View 1: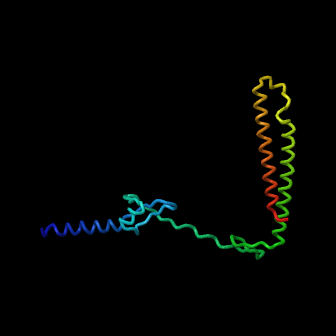
View 2 (view 1 turned 180 degrees about the vertical axis):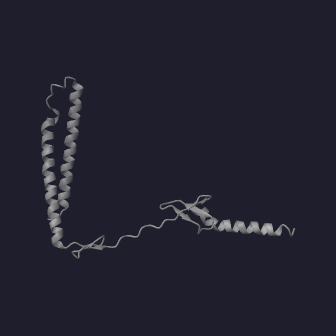
Length: 162
């Protein structure tokens, strides 16, 4: 019996060390890998043990601080733009959006003219009536797409300050 005592103690110590090193994978966003839970807590949270798989812990990158440009202007997440510069940006954005709107309205007018309310003339290469129907469906889709583009551009322009 005394000969077996050191072997039993050694086995108990090995189990204790193994229990301390048990790593659990807990579900949920974000997935949590931890060895700080007891077996009871792990079961309650629905965690599974990870056995025989090495775990690598990587430290995430720290967020960058705001950079200062040579002109003294602060750049970064907390950067503020003065009112005059913001007004210039808004004016430029308005100009670009209005140019895009003008182009989209022209495309829409051309598509509507070609579609002719579903009564477009048949072309010579459309002897097969199905080809004509396919072209009409494509023209109708184009008109819908161009109308959506025009509406989206008008919404964007309306969001800009006056």
